[in-house]
Image (cartoon, one colour):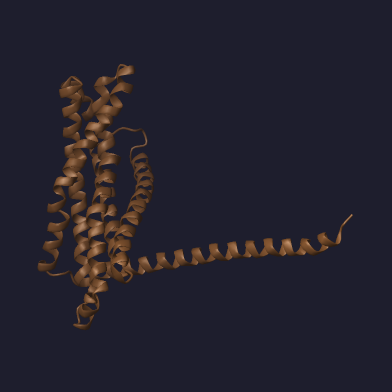
Length: 290
């Protein structure tokens, strides 16, 4: 039998549950709108940057320093990363291949994994931390100190002067650094497999040549072009939209790395599916033409 307390508390409890549900839906709706707005803002930022590529390229004096910062100064960390990637792959794969009696196939799995996936992804991740965070912090500092506004007041377009050179440096040099990471990874894997694990070097290279083709190398370099573009756009966008103060600059640098890393993984998945579909459509029987 219903009591007076039930008749009083029941609607209140239902009202409280309804208010909580409404607040939850409103929060998710606001977050969704904010996400869509941010994606649209990034898209417009990228579109304006691309527009300058077909309108007027930056001068040599602005491009070369960025090429030096992105390419030359990143060589040591990329080479070291690639070397240890190859050695770690050899360490982790050897026991499983030895249990199956396939030690001589170790070169195939190490080099295939390097040139297709690990080399491009880990090299781009290292560069997102080193190059992307630096670009976001530098541009964020310029935003906080009103240097970007000063450029605009003097008639120079900030996108053309600050973003386009960094974009070109990332798009052209990150694939080159990926080749460097792949090469050092192959050297590191060979050194550990042949020199320490005592695998026959003739079989090591023969199996590598049989299983790793030019299309595999092309796939990794092709992905790295998009990785570089994503790092440049995200990092420059976070720097241009930096909040005030030192805390805002730190958050911009951190956010640039986090978002760049997530985008690298998303692009790796999408481009991997596309490249595999392209390979299967060109060579449906699995025969390599090059």
